[in-house]
Image 1 (cartoon, rainbow, N blue to C red):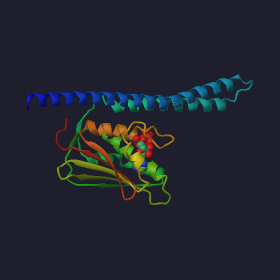
Image 2 (image 1 turned 120 degrees about the horizontal axis):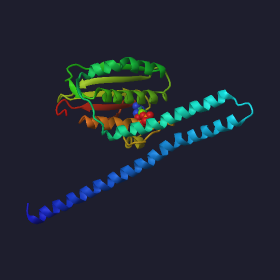
Image 3 (image 1 turned 180 degrees about the vertical axis):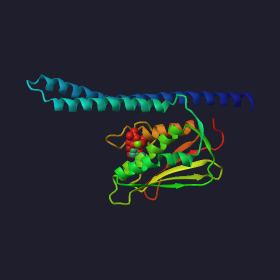
Length: 251
Ligand SMILES: Nc1ncnc2c1ncn2[C@@H]1O[C@H](COP(=O)(O)OP(=O)(O)OP(=O)(O)O)[C@@H](O)[C@H]1O
Ligand SMILES: [Mg+2]
């Protein structure tokens, strides 16, 4: 490369850096706005219920059962706000993660009871198709289990929109030709519309009234912290999420 070409490469790199910086700032701004909105809701509810308590207790013969109900709501809303904050912390993934050599199928079997009972309460079925010959991986098992739970929970929630008695979630594992481990969670629910599909993994992207939209965003952060990927593809029918964990290059 001659000198002017080198200068051009340098200028391009500087522009790219600036662009990265600006888009990072934009993402942080977007997230802050979403966060303010998400946390405002439970806080406003806490203030309302607290006012209601004051009013109820001001009556000559306060109805203590009503006061107790309002206090329970205050607790639930405060827990919800705390939950949003702790899941957001999970997005930045600064915390030390503890890695150990794991058998992915065993990790899923440990969750099976929980997933099956979650499915039953959603009038659905959860089936497992666990493949052979998977390499043991160095993983933070709690984090990977959290991802699988989030994906199955999403599938079960989506299946509620589907009438009938054939609602099913399938959790499968397989060894990719290059040795990577693939974990798929698929369902026969309504699937995902194309306008949502492009924003699925953004924080606070949700179509649910009680959703925070952090499930997929934090799951992808966990996948990347393991040098893996988490992606969506339309199922036939329904939705399918694929978690790919590399067999090599484990930190
Ligand atoms: N299996 C699925 N089928 C259909 N839609 C899905 C599925 N999984 C995710 N989605 C869509 O993606 C959105 C984002 O999912 P995500 O898990 O990030 O947030 P959420 O489930 O809405 O809220 P949270 O997980 O924080 O309680 C959902 O609101 C839903 O619209
Ligand atoms: Mg979710």
